Length: 505
Image (tube, rainbow, N blue to C red; front, side, top):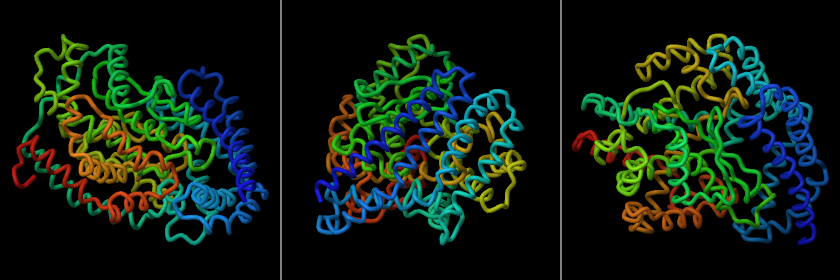
């Protein structure tokens, strides 16, 4: 059986290498590739995706998994070998339902649509990508159709990213959070605005990038196994456990965008860099779900990066980097500025309190499109109406409206956004557990020391890769199913203090 498992690992490594090669081409497309390479790049990526898909769903892998079933059942559930067989079988059964021709066509379409989006958004030209988005919707429905038996058409697409979650369970969670968040946002609004003009600069691009680099290196991002580059929409990408890269974008009139975006992506990357090295090249060498992955980016960006403990240490260095802009701004004023609450247009720039409302809007719109209740031609109007009704703001154009997020223009429609809110919930849950295990973590952060927190995350989450589902991780760490209660408590305590809400906060 050991020999059979080694054969399986060898085949899985070949699949992983093909997908990593496609990822390198995608990274180049979003960072350095000239626009003229778009058509060829779509063809090249789709070829590699097709070859990887063909190799993974071949009968030989299915036969190996069947041969290894008895061996798997003889092992403890949480052993590395049993987990590799279990997770690979689950992925094999899912991917085997997707025809090779469809997988190739989808890869070509997504690469082409992304390139068009990079031109359409700055030009405020929704008409340019509308036909492509209509095709994306058709292909997303077709993809969902390969998985009959679900209660909702979006459920299998959500399952790809967050196993165990469904439209019904997410709607229940979102309703619960909305019931807690809307009154809190209203109370904050009534308390009056916080002055955040100190974040509007100008702040030189090179200086912002250098400060961000110093911050994430101290947090624990390993630059010997990674790098950072500029792109249209920030993301993390992994080619191997020894090569985990991040990207960012910079605006000179907004100190927060690049800084918190950099911390956010480094959270994703530190998760991948912390996976057990022996998993490299296998299906275990990935974060286990979108929600758990986002829990790490949101934990480092918000729970840590927007905390007063964090800025007690880092603010003097930031003032030194930008003395002309910040020399007269106190620590208290800066802390309040980076945590100011105001309904806004852009999800990635939204404050913690209103952020989930952005996610809920997108989730509702994409499920409506998949259900056939919302046509792509009507999407901009529907988007604007939801922003007016939910957040009280109206996008002045499609650039800062329906075109702002890359997800629908670089992938499928469905399953793309719920992970952000799940990530917020898990982030609070995990931070609460970490500080219970290590009460010194807040004081460590004030001294710029992150080893205890990062070590706890590596031991309890990162090293496991995708061995356990999100719910299994929560049970292992807390002994209970995941709950939104720690997240709601965190928000009420933090913003109640910042805005002087007293007991009501």
